[in-house]
Image 1: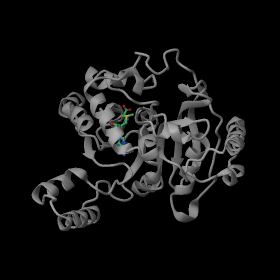
Image 2: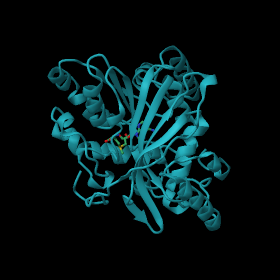
Image 3: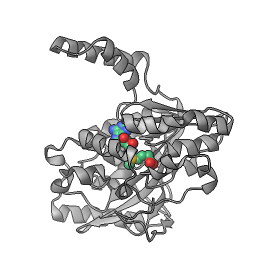
Image 4: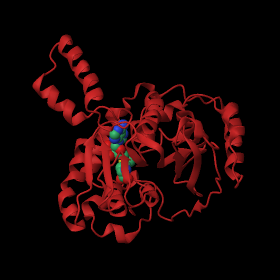
Length: 351
Ligand SMILES: C[S@@+](CC[C@H](N)C(=O)[O-])C[C@H]1O[C@@H](n2cnc3c(N)ncnc32)[C@H](O)[C@@H]1O
C-alpha cells in the first residue's frame, strides 16, 4: 500500500489506452532515481488537527483555494442552497455514476452537495448516507436536510458522524456515552475504549455489506498515511458483494517529499497527502477490488509544486460478487482527459 514500492504490480496493469501504463512505469523509475520515500510521513504534523481546523473554518466561509472546479449537472443543483454550493471542496463528480434505487455512501460528505445530488438520482427507493467527522460540516449539511426532503417529496438522505477510516465507530453515539461517562482517569479512558469497541460490534456506523456504491469527492488524500490500508479495507467491507466504489481524488505525479508532507496548509489543502497516481490504483487492488478503471483524469494539472503535478482522477472499482468470481484486476483505462478549466488554479474564485 502507501509506502511500498509497487513497481512489481505494474506489469499486471493493462490499459487499452496505453498512456497510463507508460506514465506509471515512468513514475516508478523517476522515483527510484530521486530516492523519495513515502515511508517518512508528515514530520510530526498532526494531520487530523490540521484537517479539522481547516474544514471547520471552510464550513463557515467559502475558501476558493480548497476546490478544483467541476461542472455538475445544473438540473440537480436547483434545490441545493447557495450556502452549500459555495462550500464545494470537491475535485470531481462521482454522483454521475450512481443509479436509481441504490444505497449510496459518501465518504467525507462536507456540506452535503454530492449527497443531495445523489439523492435526486437514486430517488425515493434509494438512500444516501453522508459520513464526515467535522461538526461544522455536519451542521451545514444537516441544516437543509429537512427542507430539501420536503422539496423532493421524499427524505432519503442522512448524515452520520464518523471517520472514514473507521466506519464502524458511530461518533455521535460514542459522544453520548462519553457525556454520561466523562474521562478523568486512565481507568475512565480504558472503559471508554471498551465502550468504543462494543459500539463497533453492536451498532456499527455502517454495517458490513450494506452499500451499493461508495462515493467520495476529494477526501481520501486527507487521511494519514498510517490509516490508509484500513481506509481501503473499510471501503471494501461496507460494500455489498458486486458493489462498487467511485472515488474522485487528487493524485500526484511522484511521491510528495517529506518537507511538503509536514506542511499543514498543503496537507489540508489536498496537496501533501495526494496519492501517487499509480499507488492510488494499486491501493484498490490490494484491498481486493477488481475491474479498476479510471473514468476521468485531468489532462492539465490542477496545480504544480516544483516538478510535482497534482491532478484530479475519478476511479471506479468493483468488489467481486464472491471470492471465487474475481475477474481482471484492471480494465480499460482509455482515459478521456478532462478538459482543463481555465479557472482551475489555486486561489481562483470560480467555485
Ligand atoms: C475537501 S473536503 C470535500 C467535501 C465534499 N466531499 C465536497 O465535495 O465538497 C473534505 C471533507 O472531508 C472531511 N474529512 C477529512 N478527513 C476525514 C476523515 N478522516 N473522516 C471523515 N471525514 C473527513 C472534512 O471534514 C471535509 O468535510
